[in-house]
Image (tube, rainbow, N blue to C red; front, side):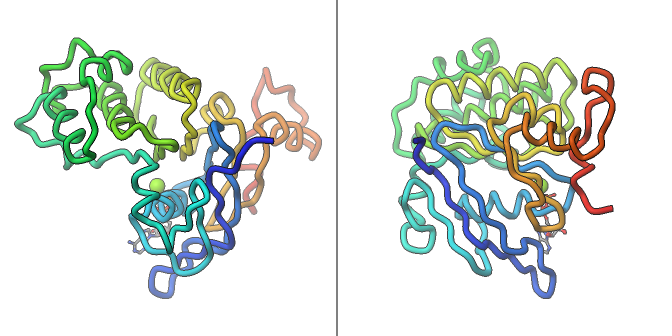
Length: 244
Ligand code: ADP
Ligand code: MG
């Protein structure tokens, strides 16, 4: 049986009076791609950022690789790869220099060209971040999650705003990272993306998980519950899980 890499139990997050995450529980298994799928405001980023130690939870428990978030946040930080905000890409530095800088911060020796090659950005080694296309920026940002050789990486809507070809390229990159043994947790609001990439999907709406299963089972369930068209013609949409 696969090991549990992330365990979230009864997670609650309140922003003042507002209950953004309403007691959700799920497990992410080692080496799976686990998707949090849902509309804007569902609580996806909040959930991710709590697991990433970047945001405080209100209650509930979180474990990563067996380490408790409350007791061992620094160990967890060392095990995970987080996408940096665009603001951390110092404008004067090129991609190779940025990787060297981040590697230094993580106390890691990294072959920058090799890393850039792995995300198909070798030719952009001397370019500045702002000179990249949308898809190249996202691939670079995914590359930076790998610098500390993490067990788990977190991707928050990595393909939002990309054109179809750039999305495809990023999907292939994410699959390659999985094939190398990394566990991946990704948020998206695209069902097709979740279906293509994810081993399991939690559909989250208004701070609650409304379904959690493999993509195939989720779609079978939609079809069984009265969705009649064959999926080749028109795919059921995860929005059917949301309360109307
Ligand atoms: P998602 O990533 O699924 O779009 P978020 O986790 O960003 O959702 O947000 C969930 C809810 O919490 C939204 O209603 C959002 O407006 C609210 N929210 C997020 N961050 C804050 C914050 N710092 N202060 C107050 N409300 C917030
Ligand atoms: Mg978000």
